[in-house]
Amino acid sequence: MIELGVSRVRIIGIGCHPGQLTAESRAAIASCDYIIAADKGPGDPLLALRRAICADVGVELVAVADPPRDRDDPADYDGAVLDWHDARAAAYDSVILDRPGTVGFLVWGDPAFYDSTIRVVERLRLEYDVLPGVSALSLLAARHRVVLHEVGRPVLVTTGRRLVAEVAAGHDNLVVMLDGRLQAADLDGDWDIWWGANLGSPHEELVAGRLGDVVSSIRQARERARDADGWVMDTYLLRRRR
Image (cartoon, rainbow, N blue to C red):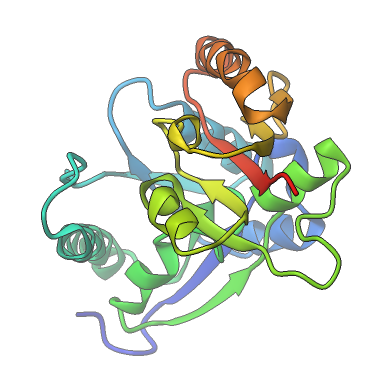
C-alpha cells in the first residue's frame, strides 16, 4: 500500500450530468494533478462524460480498466462486492504509486448514495476529502415536485435487490435505486410511483401515477433512455396508497 502522505485523494461528486457540476466541485477538479476513472470497456458512455468534464476543466484523465465483478446474484453478494472493491483499490494503487500528487475521482451523482468510491479509497490509506454532488434523489424529488417523505414519517432508501424484503418488513415509503429489473412491478397492493431515468440529462424520462397503470410506460421510457444515452440509471419513489 501507499505510505501516508505521499499523495492526496479528492472524491468529487459531479451530479447526474455535466451541467450540474457545482462551482465547488469544479474547483476541486482543477486542484487535482490528474483524475482516475474506471474504464468499463469500449464505448463506455460515462467514461466519455468524465473525459469531457476533465477536458473542459483542463485536467488529465487516466483511465484504468475496471476489474470484473460477479453480478449474477452470487450466493455471497457482500463477499463478491468486497472482492471487487479490493481489486479496484489494487488497480488504482498501481497508478498512484507511479504518479504521486493530488488525484481525483469523479463520482456520478453524490458519493454518499450507493457508490463504492469512498470505500475503495479507504483501502488506499491516503488522506482524502469528499465533495458532495447533486444526487439522483434530489433530482427525482425536484422533477416530480414532491417531498420524499410524508409529514412526520420516514423514507427508506434502498436498492431493487432488497425491495421485496423491505416491503415485507413493513416499509411503505421507499426511494429505490439500482433496480434494472423494475422489481416494483411484482409487488402486491396499491402503490403510487414517481419514476425517473437519466435524470439531469437532455434525454431524461419521467413517469408518475398508480403503479399498476404505468408499469408499461416505465418500461418503454427505460428503452428510450437507453437508446438516447447508451445507459439507464433510474430512481423512483414508491409509496403505498392509504
